[in-house]
Length: 124
Image (tube, rainbow, N blue to C red; front, side, top):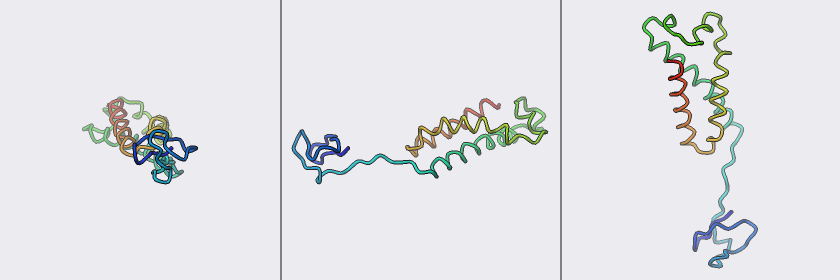
């Protein structure tokens, strides 16, 4: 798609001129959609996995006597040493929610913050 500089009409790439004002394609700016790179998904995966860890850490800091007052399922995984496996499910859910918003930088950060608030509300 390209946009005509004269009238602002959106024209498909197959046409050389604007149907509305006869503006030429070489006068127009080409609009190219942003393509995601592999590192965008890697960064989203790392952010999605660190978010549950951050929430668990904040939960630990908020309790005066630590894990003994915690009533969440995460409490049961602390002693076993498999907490990193238990946090894979929230990380996967966060990643799947975050993926559609990766093209939009501001929206992806907003979704990341909202996901953190949701996980924090579920743990408390």
